[in-house]
Amino acid sequence: MLLYQPNNGYCYNSDTHFLYNFIKENLKKFKNVKGKVLDIGSGSGILGLLVCRDLEKLELNQCEVQDKFEQLSNINSKNNKIENTLFKGKFQEINFDKEFDICISNPPFYHCDVVKTENENIKIARYNDSLPLEDFIKKTAKILNQNGKFFFCYDVKQINDIIILLNKYKLNIESLQFVHPKKEKEASLILVYARKNSKSLTKVIPPLFVFEKGEFTQDVLDIYEKCSTHSIKVDL
Image (cartoon, rainbow, N blue to C red; front, top):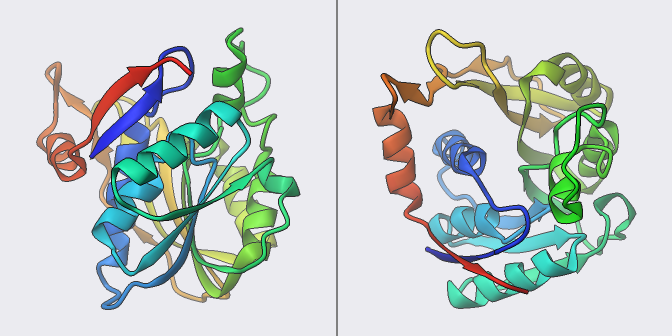
């Protein structure tokens, strides 16, 4: 999959690849995955495009606040021959004209109190003051259908708030996976699958370790191979 990315701005990273793999693994138990999927904060479009490349019965919808990334989402959708509907604006403020079967997102999740970059495009894409966690979860719960699925990744340090807010808005955690830089390091990222109006018990998938002895682990190499993405930087 060929993807154009901004030369001076936020570029997708391994978090998105790990989330894509998490989504694919959790959807394996469903025989006929179809319906409307929304990629929240689509950026260059990579997450939604990967999921819809592999699950062809899904209808791709994207929402994005930054003009630069709106352009890239449309360009990358067209180049990869995947039809998309793009909603422009802040996720919290968009009046969607439909409900969604699946919502997916690699949202801005760094806490707003940390030291920020001066690059405005990167700042919006990384820090959650542009999309606070409660706003993110509340709006997603509102636009999901009655059995809708919600997949996202987030800063693991905020797990307490994630659990509380998902419960508050009637989204039951069905599956979790923790991502660690190395086996001896604490987890840095959490991958979450929650479902609306579900009563299932939570499954915790074995952790994903990124590096071992200075090299990518085989699990990570396998994920990159599944994704098969290639980036080209462009000025917009």
